[in-house]
Length: 118
Image (cartoon, rainbow, N blue to C red; front, top):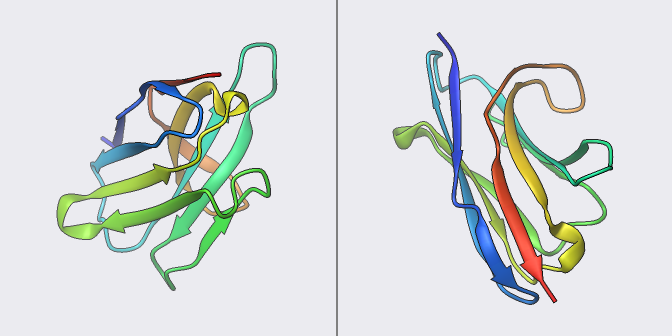
């Protein structure tokens, strides 16, 4: 059974940093694509970043380019999202998902809340 568990969310002041983790299990962690998404209250879900293990490609939404970095540790079956220079508009529930970058995602985690205060 595929499971994705996010952690690392919390409350931070604007300009601060957080590192989210997505711990994965139930599939072979050597051929995957995992994306990070976020959803703020009253807004649609937004794709934030994605990493593809096949060629190491990474993708970022324009709103987070230069501030967020996605990475993976295959030994730990974990994908990270390092978030720097956080802004109040980054406040949302952040989800990781297994699928294909820019395409469909079949499995989702339960989400972790990120709140950035001004």
